[in-house]
Amino acid sequence: MGTVKCIGILTSGGDAPGMNAAIRAVTRAAICNGLKVKAIYRGYKGLITKEIEEFKSQNVSNIIQQGGTILKTSRCEEFMTPEGRKIAYDNMMEEQIDALIIIGGDGSLTGARLFAQEYDVSCIGLPGTIDNDLFGTDFTIGYDTALNTIIEAVDKIRDTATSHERLFFIEVMGRDSGFLALNGAIASGAEAAIIPEFETKFDQLEEFIKNGFRKSKNSSIVLVAESPSLGGAMHYAERVKKEYPQYDVRVTILGYLQRGGSPTARDRILASRLGAAAIDAIMEGQRNVMIGIEDDQIVNVPFSKAIKNDKPIEQDLVNLLKELSI
Ligand code: F6P
Image (tube, rainbow, N blue to C red; front, side, top):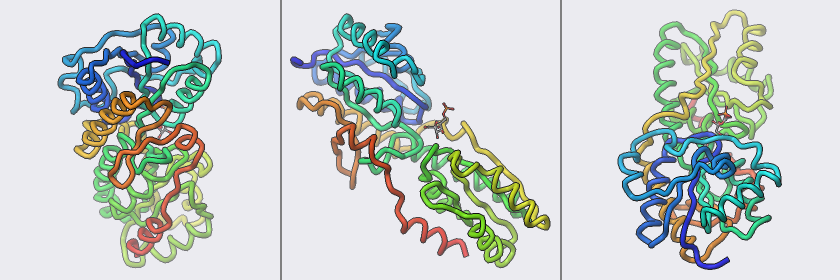
């Protein structure tokens, strides 16, 4: 592969607040470095259907504050097939795109890794997901905004929970990881979090109810990660209702509102730093890495590391929640 003259940029998978800030940073940093920028719409799908447009600096004006993604997004099954990737590659060559910048989560970076293994193209990933579940980066773009959305919602539920003296199970997103649930619980003063990384057997729940609920407090809030392996908030609520009919139990599923909204300052700055660093990586000849942040320093993480490893949740945070919810 020769020198990169033109980059393609796309957003893929679940949208996350701050993706637009990343698109802006990539576009402007690329232009500053003399590169041409081609925007690809609807994720990998747009690479297959050739929904591609050249971007100038003004195409990314006034978007840093917007949630969602101006490039649209999709989860593209066709790109997961060798035939789909062949069409995508041919289109990339026709458009004279030398390198791809992919903003997305685990599934999107898995697609990028496959593509880079099969074809001589440089793919640079930016971690864009509210789930914060990518290994090799302390934070993903969108996570901080989603966390703030969660605590705002939980604060409101707390008002009604306290007034009615109820036990609330609140389900939050995160797919198979509990970052949103655990840190959301710490930040909102919830009594417990049920997350897939740490098994919560029913007897543990029982212990919590006996020790915590109605002992020193007149209401309780438990955040539950949506993970299918846990069964969701509804599952726990049903079990408690059955075992403890005296408790007034309610469920709220926060759902897709967690993915929307204007990004926080933290997410805007993170997205701007990672976006510019993606162009630095291309200029340095780096290939097939995810740009992450560790201890406030930019790091380049090989796709194999970012995707294959489960990002651990610190036991200290679990202990902290327990200690502070007495
Ligand atoms: O990965 C982000 C996320 O919002 C997860 O938390 C959630 O499980 C999933 O996407 C929902 O995906 P979809 O938008 O396809 O329903």
